[in-house]
Image (cartoon, rainbow, N blue to C red):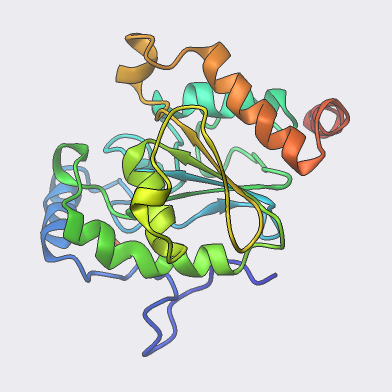
Length: 234
Ligand code: SF4
């Protein structure tokens, strides 16, 4: 399976960190670079195993997390629960994701976002979700047969449905839902593991563990994969 690659001229489905198709987001990143010259502040590529059968889809980079470090859910609160639980189920070699150079690997798992650029106030407009959707579509097309896609929140869920060419009304978002995909594989839904959702306990650790456990079970992985990932961690 091919991984996510740099843009090729004329091929708008191939992600590039030079993409500037969304004028509002490109302007916003320019202003962020002026205030934080050390930040990545560009489109953030997917991270993880190029042969992953588990694809996690978040919303968009966070200002001081992925937008700073250049790696999804890395360096801010949003990644705390995500990576701890991925490690618990063998999908990450470490329980924390601090920096792009921390040596973390995600065996069998890849993480991306529905919108690859930091949006103002963490809120992309629908047109930006649509404009970025071909990149997600390409990511889905490169997954092996019978994958599990885990959508974090309603926008990520809708982006996956759009990228899969399915009818939104036939696949409503609901935390803990499992949707059988016509092309094979499954879409699982979870509330986003944002600071707000975890601190208000809209999403508890137990709720999120249950969803990732289901992903592991569908993929036929579980405790043995977790033990193996921990061995690699030593
Ligand atoms: S959000 Fe996606 S399509 Fe829009 S500028 Fe960023 S990478 Fe390009």
